[in-house]
Length: 116
Image 1 (cartoon, rainbow, N blue to C red):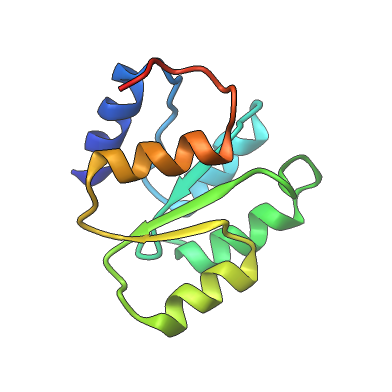
Image 2: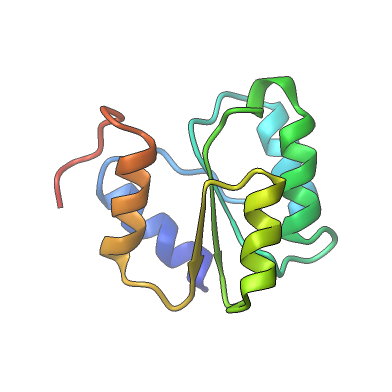
């Protein structure tokens, strides 16, 4: 799965990663601890990425947490909606690992992780 592949890449670069199988589980995970960055898809079971982002932005602890959308939805209207709801970056799959790492490092300067 793409989610696991992205987690593998980020873990190999020294980032701590938590995964959730759907939007509802992701919200529960966010309530349990500190998170510096969120990577989400638009197409998820039980809660789509748009609703997930809206819910995250209602959480005081995550109003400013950077959000990257990585999705197969290659439509300008979807990108605009995701960014309007509060995502910082919209990336269309498939994407090169370097592109994802670039955005993470840009959104989290000084966050650690090893140089690629």
